[in-house]
Amino acid sequence: MEKKLKILFDNLCCSQCKAGFDEDSIEIKRREPGLLVTHLVCRNCGKSFGVAFLGLSGLDIKEPLEVQQGPEPINYDDVIDAHRFIKNLDEHWQNYLPKN
Image 1 (cartoon, rainbow, N blue to C red):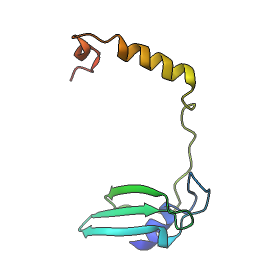
Image 2: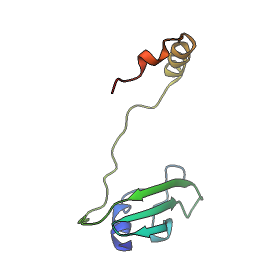
Image 3: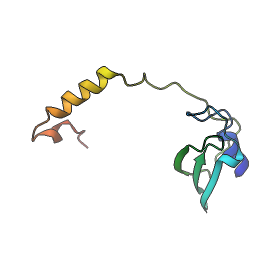
Image 4: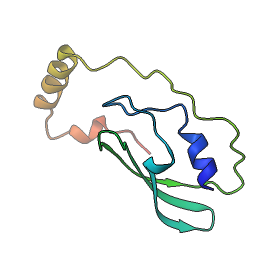
């Protein structure tokens, strides 16, 4: 199982210091059949990437995860727009929530 976890993080690096992750970066907090609770920490700078619940039963991992580009970073105009939107919410703010 640890080998599968190492393969998952082979191509990834710390967003803070850009150091790569290794098998010592992944701490298994809890192990149950088909489920691992893990904690990912950069061993170079100490940044914690939180706890993850991984269901790996029956998963055939042969290649590492691919790093994918996300959306554009939030800029100052986005923050101002969000501030104005929140500031102008009234008692009907729930109308903006998705209907299930």
